[in-house]
Length: 622
Figure 1 (cartoon, one colour):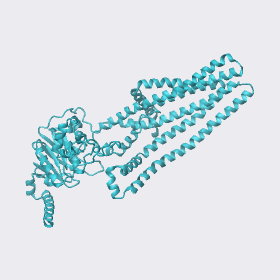
Figure 2 (spheres, rainbow, N blue to C red):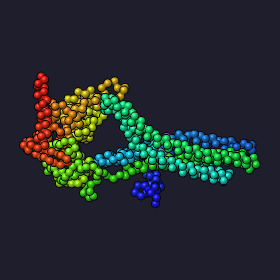
Figure 3 (cartoon, helix red, strand yellow):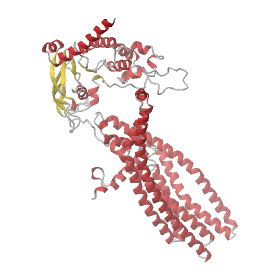
Figure 4 (spheres, helix red, strand yellow):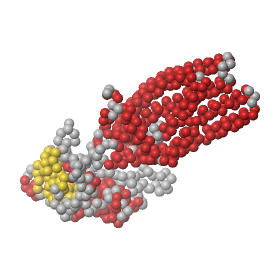
């Protein structure tokens, strides 16, 4: 079979489109059965109205021409009733169509983001192809799927109208009926080709569209406003944004030109057929072959048939395009788990930590083309012990944390939780046992209470628990001093202009945000493993001392892993591990490592000298 006719998994394109039609229609039916049934009824009635109008018009004209006054009023009343129905049904249909689109949109968005939330790792979110697929899938909303769902009703209506009008036209002129039908075939072929090209163009410029949005956000987002203005990046970013916009518009322009040429030629062919038919009908009327009513019916039938054919072609072409977009939605929803457990080994629950966590000969790299980040790492974190990890940038510290959280699986080797391979445990169950503060923590545009509460959703309404976590992170006084305390929105982007309180939204400093993120982590107080990645990187010296003093008390008899560049913060850990090039090059207590006099001792001396130099300069200047 030609390659072009195949799609995912060797499935033929026609079969794939048919499967997508069925899937989309089932979604529509699930979204709203009553609106769908009502719209179907309106579709059938609407499809019969053009033929009824044509015949009633013929009867009225013939009776008037023959001066038959007894029946003309009846036919006129029927024609008026048809007009009344035709005037009301579109509005009812539009309401039902919009309602279906809204319900379908909710159902599809729920399905898409439920699937995305099911992916537990990070690798897919770093994959450009996956991001393109998601971007295209997001366009498959309820409104965009209209041509496939409610559009099927429009197709049915046009098909019913077409059959009835072709029947009328065939009675008057079978040849003309055939010509009008044949003239629609090239239109259908051309529109299907254009729809494939349009979706291909959208997929091709998807990355350019994302970059355009990215540059636009950089120019408008408050978090980038400082550097954008300090470095004078406004024009640079604007030019980048306009460049990506030009790429998108160039693709659209090429397709629009092709579509304009094609549609113009097809319209010329359609008009030529209609004009020839009109000349034939008039000549037949002059020769007495057709009556005046026949000519009227003929003209109405030709016009209605061409209109129905054009509508049918549009319906099919738009449905085809929507189905191609829906394919991306279906592709994302059909992706398997990114971190699957071995068959028959997955445990729904993870026992509380009793002995410790062991990394055994762990190797990891982010891609086969990338260098190894961890090289045969062996590490044991005993239960109840405090372990610190130090090392230069790129040593593998952050990657170690990601593996412990199972955002990735080791390329080789295993990570054991009391002897259980963590790959045999659902990631969400493993993470339920952890409290983690990431170095690149999130600043949520939520209230202060919610910013803490997202660390343990089950405690979101536990205000005493939230306050206790804030106290441990030394941020309780800051939060209580906000305009609305814990209910203060920590953002200005959602501020209501009508709100009389100018401080309805507050922006915290970097150090305050870090302590709030720490409170979020400490809310998970009863977890088995506490991981802190640079918990004091954004704090001043006094705040850093206070935080580590509190954390030392909090970590007593708790299993914890502390990562820090500041060696003074790790000196009281029960075991300090020095990473270099993805391997452990030193391991021991602070005193043992200082006595060894190797890399740790050298780095500690350098940092200590920096502080002594600062102190001496301060004394001298005083």
